[in-house]
Length: 294
Image (cartoon, rainbow, N blue to C red):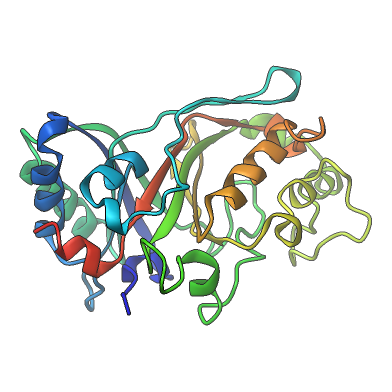
């Protein structure tokens, strides 16, 4: 029985950094992967840093063909939706996501990771994030209201025993920039109709609009996922880092296509106030699978 990377479920951490890398020499990708996994075993220690390590699905399939799901692929093409809306594909080769209770520890660990991978991979994107009013995003709404409990989350987020990649997970990583002036100019009642939930208590509206965010990402329709979204950015330029884990990539892909209006023409109303800047899928292997690369 394989063990999931514990950082996937390490709730309550307030400081995060996401480092996305491209391998310098694809022929030496195993050397790069070994360097990543040797930095620190992905586990949680008191006062320490939690790790989640993921790889471009195609790269993981090359390195571990017997331990990789065959139906997972990178975010290799833009998702084109209704009214010219586009979700960009910005796929990279690997992700190292670190989280902790204090940013200084995360910062120092990120420096170590970048230093140890020098010459093997180039840092393509670095994003820091932090918690906002405990569990709200920068729209002011509670984020992750439909998340499963930690008891149920592994069934939704992890590939089951007995299949290639068992205890691994498919991770969708996106950055969404908020148009805060336009959003905050809306009355709360209008914001609630865009979201499909009440703002104060996060209660789902009985007559939510078809294009509301809740309706376009209905997990009863597409399947359950485990989200770890966080705010990012500065006072004048900010948004949400979407972090979604799933045992099946199609759940995530169909949700994105639904938001874009590519399924039935109904585009998510929230996309009129937020802009996707990045999009990548990573396969997050089990701890045992990572150890095989050392």
